Amino acid sequence: AESALVAAAVAPELLGDFNGLRMTTTEGMKLVAPLAGAGVYAAYGGPAVALVDAATFVCAAGLYAGVRVREERPRPAGGHWRAQTAEGARFLWGHPGLRPLVVAGGAALLLSGLGGPLVYAVVDGLGRSPAFTGTLYAAQGAGSIVVGLLSGPALRRLGERRFAAYGIVLTAVAVAAQAVPSEPVALVCGAAIGVGLPCVLIAALTAVQRETPDALLGRVTATAGTLMYAPTAVGLAAGAGLVELVPYRPLLVLLALARLAVLPLLRGAQRPASASRTADRSPSDANPA
Image 1: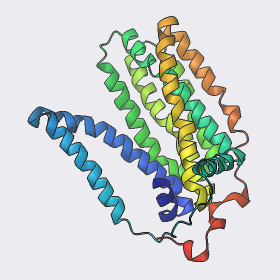
Image 2: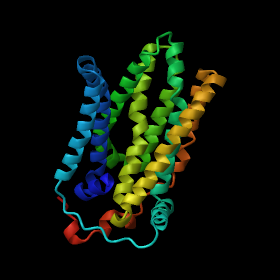
Image 3: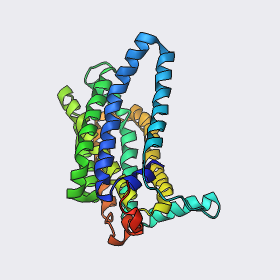
Image 4: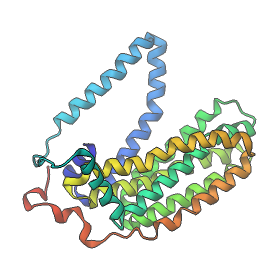
């Protein structure tokens, strides 16, 4: 629903800017919210934190309801829901520009999941307590805030394929450099991962929003989200086992090389001129509020 609303309210040429700013807002809140929650918990206890948390969802629902956009009434969909879902998956898999981006995004997040448990091994190798992990994640969040602000201009200059590729390369270099036993290097690597990892996700989401016809947007976005984010859980489980069996420094280098192996998946991510969503809109729908 959110993707459909974004596609209706934001001009196609500004989707990259919007998705980047949304990334910046999300990552910024990840840095602020834990501190705020800890403060509320210390002052008023757990029930107060739960109530404040619930209130934020109510506020979000109210803000969504307050958005004013000219939106066509959805046409009744025929056929079984499984057939409708399959139609969205077929469109995504058959699209020469979207499939490579989404598959590359899934592969990148799979490798990110594999490397997740290694952060604790890196911290242990630095001789620091597990609490230092929070500092590395804060650096990563700061990097994601930066790339969110820059993603719109970068997408217009580079295009989705190159933007995603540069992000994957930057992440690979940062992951390999984490093998260096140095706190400053670890912090720089955390920030670099925060910059590089979201690139392929922003590129893929922006392309899906722009290239998918309105009638299929919800299903295609849901399929793309599943293909990109579900591998993270698999990677985390596998990474937790690998870190017990393999020394973490060689494993970091192997994961960096594996990220570079994702790059060939992006070769076919070219945007067909005939596939743009704007061609599917009527004149009255071309300038949404």
